[in-house]
Image (cartoon, rainbow, N blue to C red; front, top):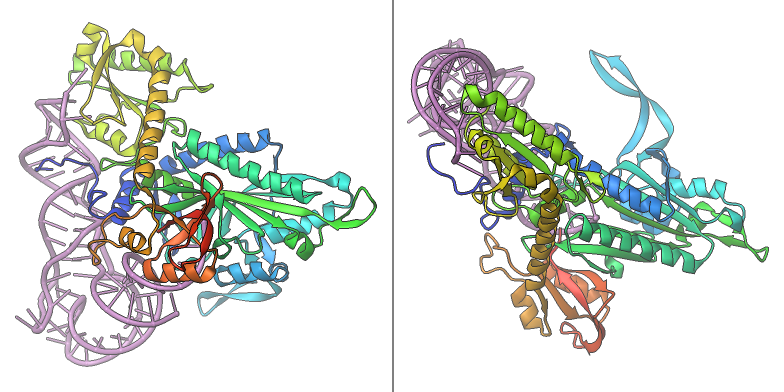
Amino acid sequence: MSEKQKCAISPQRAEDFPEWYQQIIRAADLAENSEVRGCMVIKPWGYALWERMQAELDRMFKETGHRNAYFPLFIPLSYLEKEAAHVEGFAKECAVVTHHRLEAKDGKLVPSGELTEPLVVRPTSETIIGAAYARWVKSWRDLPILLNQWANVVRWEMRPRLFLRTAEFLWQEGHTAHETREEAEIETMKMLRVYETFARDFLALPVLTGEKSESERFPGALRTYCIEAMVQDRKAIQAGTSHFLGQNFSKAAGIQFQGRDGSLQHAWTTSWGVSTRLIGTLIMAHSDDDGLMMPPRIAHTHVVILPITPKEDSKAAVLEAAESLAQAIRATTFHGSAVSVEVDTRDLGGGVKSWEYIKKGVPIRLEIGPRDLAQGTAALSRRDHPHKDKEFLPVADIPSRIAGILDEIQSALLARATSFRDTHLRRLDTKEEFYAFFTPANAEKPEAHGGFALTHWNGSAAVEEQVKNDLKVTIRCIPFEGSAEPGVCPFSGEPSQQRVVWAKSY
RNA sequence: CGGGCCGUGGCUCAGCUUGGUAGAGCGCCUCGUUCGGGACGAGGAGGCCGCGGGUUCGAAUCCCGCCGGCCCGACCA
């Protein structure tokens, strides 16, 4: 590269956010598009992030009394037909298996052996899990059932984007059945809070919590709650959902039990999930024009040590010092687990290696070279600081300081994201302000604009529809806290009980 | 699924209008000098020009069909 590049990623966020997003994924080697339309290959660096998310969430699910199970990928078509709203919500995006055999014909393989009943590749598992629960539940003593499954699901999306919207994606879906309505409602809220906590403490994402309006509700649910994050183009992204399904699915599947009073009752069910979309959210929330930035608590690699070996005669000593430093750091812990350290001994020159780890978002880089050997130091760089900043520290002090620095980085990312979100969250009271807020100056190539608008709403779907048509802005959630106050819906002029969160969204 | 644009080494693209057997930059490999911030030199590998058919002595180039991608709409975790 003959000319100096200021940033590793081109284009920059401000120039072309969607393209920047794709370049981050490429530069950090997270994933790539597959030859199968709409599907992605998640590469090791990206999959490791998912494994970290799985590990922490799985722990949190178990701590709240859930266990894992696994249900079939294929769902009988007839199951999907049982819940009317559910069918309507998912039918259009279902992949359907109609045959079970291939036969060679004219040198080609053609499907044969048509199934008597087509099988749907699960877009979600309420129906087939409901059928199992119906078999398992006889008595109030069989409840609650608190299960989760880690699985892939397929939704035949028309416009895929890596991690954000793909035909196949990975997720977890919790499915619970309860004796009473109240118990199920508590469960729904409890798991929403788990997601909120996870997003804040591990992903360093401040999220808004609230309920979805009817038009955004999960097909078949009585209520859908969500966590909504803001990413750096100021759009909202639904990062997790928790649904109170009432008795809709238990009536459809026949989940019945004999209650304490001897009467036959339908169970109350919930479902809740987060997906690999969290990776996309993480990227869009924290990355900068030099690449990915992994919050330390979700990073699979906390520290990378880069030995500087310019001269053959000192090489062995430098490598030994690097390895010994790695061992000392691995012996320390960060939130209960060993700090994860990589030593990159590849024979690559210059800043190439440094830049690779900047792009990949490793929180801490340590350089150790011949000069350090003499002085007993190593150079420490933080991913959340400008990439040229480097602090020379006594090697002996480094291991004990790593966990503290990781915590600082974690806090810095959360603080930065929170400040960004708050800067772009407005209380807007007139239609004019609202429309101005969500209208880009350059319609041809919209710049980052808008944000979250806290604006009154009369509760009508017609208003939502109008705003969506005009601005592509939707209600992201009806927040739980701090929004209940009488006012006037600026779109209809009608009275409103509270402000709701409006935004453009992914 | 509707409208627009586009498919040429791994990536970004030139070549196509006016048919004559394929190029550049980056990346990759080897060797050497380098290495504390994307280094330099020399050499090298890699392409049924998206697929199928047609026109032609001859097609990346012209014609037809299909497939795929991107953007905009509808839909969505």
